[in-house]
Length: 488
Image: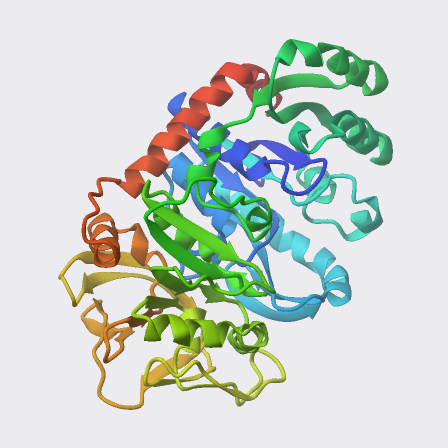
């Protein structure tokens, strides 16, 4: 007999309503009550991924939720991960392994065959958990996609678990989103939906009481909490590129300015979070059509899901010219993973792994050549920075091999092997190591190379855990956690 764990699913009335954040906070809250909690998301679409203990990959949001639970990462927390490579297609990762590429239409046909793997992972987690908190994807009311759904109601019905809706009042129309979702879903799905949470509330909650009455009268749904906006959420890692759309430019300029060109297929940009958390650092995302500002201290080229396509995109924007001018002025450049590959002399893709572009001249700032070939590198690793002996740790997640074209100065030593490059002029650096800036001493020393008079004390990893605790406190105060647990 298959073990059926206690579980509760949180589905949104739309994308970016705060599901991931709420689940992370609830994970920490229930763990503090002594429960063994595990996060689960049947299907995720994101190019922000994390490496698991099996050497697979899952969405970054589930990595944060696992951290809130005090668990090692496993592929079973997010059995289906879609990594967009173009406007119409994605790489499909199933239980941590790349299944292949699929267009949106092809993936719709493929989805039903993935449900057994999704349920297998769900029950695998349930073998050791008291409670599984499940996060849906997008909107619960995407009834046009319901026939092949594995992410929302399709999964909830297959796993036979109750559902809580989450609505975002900050974007407006929350009454219509809750009521409209209820009207669109089927009768069995309505019976499965036990209530809702209102997220990101600002102002006097008592003014919303009449709205709660309207929702209850219209669709007989119980409210399990009106959650005020949680400002410290900005100190936690972002889930996906949608969060970049909502990021506002700092109102007050800070001493250290880091400019990040936004690639069309930007990936693993949580590398920016430790830098963003520093009080004296301004991390600014430069959108397409904008020039890279001339007063930057550092230009950081982030990861990319499609290096060659994004290298072409960089050149279309004229950012290659801006970057070279920045170096001529004495400014520093760092490339991470895909950004590192772009800094070399050439990127080749003879087997068409990324698409139709077979080769492209790089930015020419490092003496290396990259060839796109498998197998995909997925591993956690650690070591030291060869410039200052500071410890570094993180993970590698990339296709391709980069080789030096002439004797060069390596930047890091990872697991006993040299890795990354530093240019002859000392202004350009690159590495495959994601998470390198999470190491406090390394980050502080690097930022001091940009501004000698800075005094830094931030402990980034400690701050993330403190914010998770504050988020759990926040939800304890404004949510009916006993009532939610009773539903599981």
